[in-house]
Image 1 (cartoon, one colour):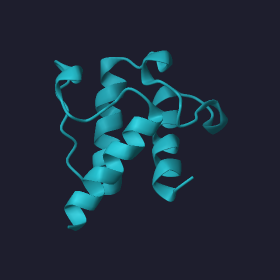
Image 2: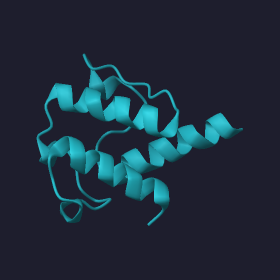
Image 3: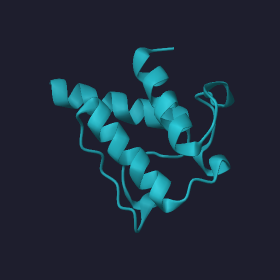
Image 4: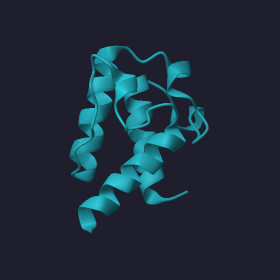
Length: 87
């Protein structure tokens, strides 16, 4: 597991009030029952931690290109944004 993935799992576990061992990259976010406030806090934490801007519309979360379906999808999306920024 990459350091990025580990950091993202730690952030999600914190926002979902779960233990680190409760999450894997296959964990679906809809299974965590995060409310909209927790989702916004998650996005802000990702942006702050990785110094990126996440394209996210809280009013219509499925409309953006940022995939929030699973932990693994978030890892891929964040790694993509980080690499775009570095380019």
